[in-house]
Image 1 (cartoon, rainbow, N blue to C red):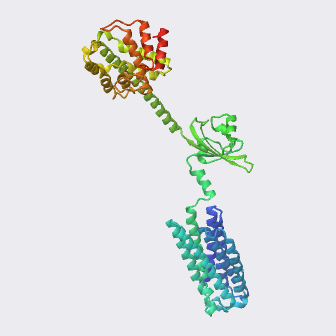
Image 2: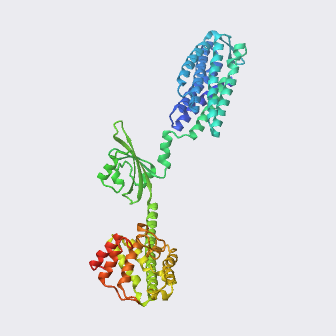
Image 3: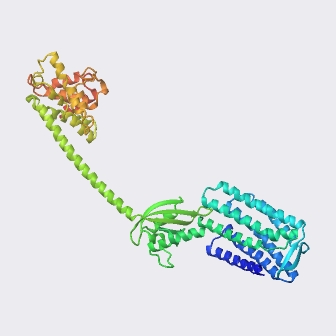
Length: 547
């Protein structure tokens, strides 16, 4: 009698526990449906065997036993569905497996619940039974074996394809629970077929198997988010505003953070333009956009907080917008930091430009000082470098150069004779009567000037004027014998300006040449000593008195 009461208590506990678990989880899905149905079948299994043991009317005992057997067959089928849902096996063909299993379960139920295969009798204060061996018991053994093989196969398959420790632990739980159920079914399923008195242990095994089933489902639910649990999590825990709008831009749902962030009153249904600084027309454009995803930046209307918005549109089968999900991120801190960094960057840029201008001014002053120093070596060439720089600048302006390039050319022209620092003053002042050896010495001032200026990186190509201003367009110049446009253009310009100033100023050995003679000399050397295009520009300026 005690064991029968225990079975009834277990049956009631399984029913209450299972339905309470499903109600508490508030989750749908196949797994929780299996738990609900399994709770009912375990209840029938245990309650049927428990009441059968307490009942002295053998006719009614058949009814209780039939209920218990219905619970047995149904529970095994539900367990197969449960394991399949946990492991994800037989995805395509499971229905083809369940159909014959269900048919076999019905046949098994009809065979083993037939009164002709069972004999009831009193035993130690309870109603016991024995079974007559036959087709029913053989079929039941085959049926249970097939289900066991399927369950074990699914568990083994899953074991071989999972990697996480918790998943392998779940497989072990499934193994243990179903093998324990099989062993618990032996005393009251197989032994009565061999004349032994039935001991109703299968119901106890089913109860513990069901407890393990709920535990496995709970372990799975702990690592899987259903739609409801995700909604709950988003609503209560996400620390950003999550808003949903209909096609007209009216708010239809918000999480708790969004309600507090936008100060939305209960039952209030604001529009998008009520929450953000935007006109209704601009908001309509956003909600009618063709793209499904947008990212924009707006300020909130209530607190003028700068926010980044990510909008995702859900469309119907006609591709018309239905709902728009909006994730709102408060970027006011980032915006302030960006503005501060940007302001600092602008200030640094201004300081850098000011320092650059100061350095350029100092550089230009230094260049002018050096140029004056060079020119001061010879009273008759005083101001020569400045004049060459002025002429070169005029030519560059006529050629359409930009201001930066013109200034660079001017600096180059100012220092084109810097190499004369390394030349004897006597050679500079008596260049009309020097020997060939002395002339070769004088020509070295181009190389000396190039060496002095080549490492000054602040002004690119600063050494070109000093090094190449005595090159000739026909390739007969010095020091490198460059020809045509292989001569840097700055040096070709300086060559024209330098030659003109040399002829146009008083030297120790002669007076300035007449204008006609200068023009004649320049034209005579067009295309040989001078670049013809540059010379033409210079002559045009000279004839228009713009030099």
